Image (cartoon, rainbow, N blue to C red; front, side, top):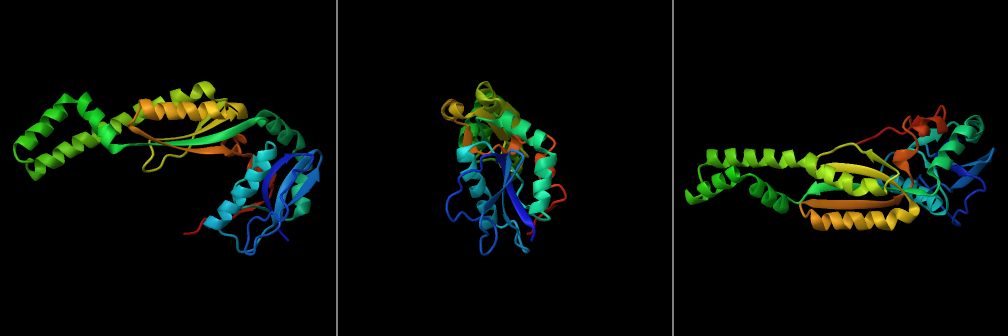
Amino acid sequence: MSTYVYGITRTPAPPLRDGLTGVGDPPRPVRVLERDGLVAVVSDAPDDLRPKRRELLAHQQVLAQVNAERVVLPMRFGSVSEDDTTVGQVLVERAEHFLERLDTLEGKAEYNIKASHNQEAVLHIVMAEHPELRAESEANRAAGGGSREQKLALGEKVARAVQAREPVDAALLRRAVEPLATEVSEGPQSTGWLANLSVLVEREAGDALLSAIEELGTSAPQLDLKVNGPLPPYSFVEKTDASADATATARTVPATG
């Protein structure tokens, strides 16, 4: 039976909630494997595992429970090893490495902050900063709205001006969180976000971080800010991806549409 790995922490084994289950349909019971001062939080791996919403949430919820008690090195969703023996061997072989990472991340938590533009507020700023655009807009209104070509031309200029503000406003977010952060990691960019930051902070600094983000939202109303955390330190396990080490010859579940 293949073994699904959620994360790695140190002994003693974390007190898992009675009846805690993870991925699979039906959900597989979660258990622990202990070797050389380390604990792998695992379950049996279903043969037909796919990255569906229920499965992703199950993976996250198991990690959240362990992370509430102590630091955990979270594995990527879909980290499956050949069997319990293989996982145990990796814990023994990589014990020094995993313990060093756990020491580094002890007492810390991750917060993810995504920023997008509030369109009405950012347009107000752009028009204030670019009098030529404001004049062109007023001229169009005076001419009954302007021709289709004039509207398109103005719209393209405004869109470029808004786009040019994105790195400026992304820098505002970074400056707000960096004084409180142990480390900051930029996540993958996607349509709709001008910034996607993962921030590692001491657990006791979490409230201060949330306050700083709230204050930024007030002082920079052009920013819509979404915060998720505290989280296990997904983005800070290590730069070279410890999840690959943790499951050794593991296969990763492929994405599906």
